[in-house]
Amino acid sequence: MFAKPPPAEPGLFTRNVLLFLAGQNVSLFGSSVVGFAIIWYITLETSSGVWITLATVCSLLPQVIISLWGGVWADRYNRKLLIMVTDGFIALATLGLAVAFWAGFRSLEMLLAISAVRSLGAGIQTPAVNAIFPQLVPREGLARIQGINQTLNSIFMLLAPAAGGAVLAFMDISWAFLIDVVTAAAAILITAFIRVKKIERASVHDSFFADLREGIVYAFRHPLLIRIIACYACSFFLFVPAGILTPLQIGRSFGGGVWRLTANEIVWTVGSLAGGVFMSLYGNFKDKPKIISLCLAAFGTAFGCLGMAGSFPVFLAIMAVAGFFFPVIATTQTVFIQEITQPAMMGRVFSIIQIVSAGAMPFGILFFGPMADIVSVESILIVSGILLVLVGALYYRSNRNIAIPYSGEPFAENSVTPPKKND
Image (cartoon, rainbow, N blue to C red; front, top):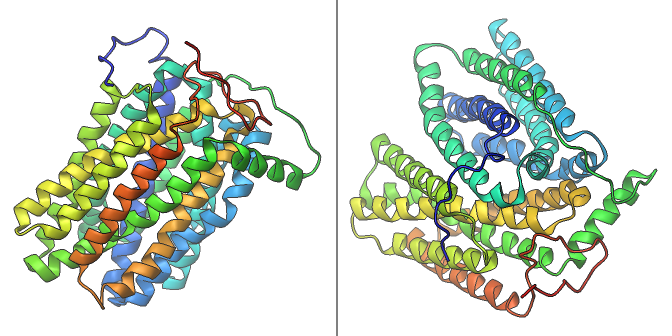
């Protein structure tokens, strides 16, 4: 099941790949610093759950709405240029916010508006980023590069809260905005030096909506994509309790204290870091649906165990294990989609995936948040864990009778029946 870690292929760690990883992770660091700074600033200024909810909605909903457009643009236009333009768009909006704050216009409504603008940029950029990887990386190297990318993501996500907290503690939130502007400019400059192979468009339509319809029909008629889309919807909805309710569980069951909440975030990130390293070494799985199913079952088991943890050290150990499996499943799902999707459809397919994954989060918050005031968080975690195990089992069962194109040949654009697996 686990491939031995191969030596670095000469064509894998190319200048283009290294530049792209550097640019994207530098940009991620700046965006994460601003994200943490905005949430913490609103929390400190208002101590209001309503304002926090509004900030969360403004950071999620716009990217869900714009993603379909972003996917079509990623398939119609130059993906590298689209990534650079959206980085610049976000940086200009953030720079305007920094100038406004320096000038004394400190409005919470302005923070929400810029969060929405930044979310729009992310919704346009994310499908292009996911779609461009196969243009830079050989198919056999996708899992390793995505594993390395997940490792770098975890490192910067570990550093970003510390940087955001330091800025708020010793300087002013405007400097957090400036960090994002500088990192975005650096990312644009780095990306400009990348050479990207052109892809052949499957078809060209004058109508934007014809392209949009073509992508939706392709995704929902594809026998493997429709299953993984359903898997995304169910699993991300069930991830919500562990994501938003565990801080509440810590306060209720183990006692308050910022250090406990910080420890919770750190062990998750360290687990994710280990998972990313694992994927960069051993992530070239052949039977990816099986790995996805096993990871969902492992997630479900870990979430159920969180609900039964009797002490805080045990809770942290389980959280680290859960963190390990996140990059494993995220990388495997992403690479699997990249392998089975036609290159000219990649942007639209990933826009649908983004809508499903990002859209499931607000629904999960609205559903599980109020429920936590009626039943215990532990009970919610146990039930959601059991349901995740069930989702993993159903996903595995649904793929048993479908031949997976391990040869690397994507399904034909209008194919409903996949090709038979080569002997």
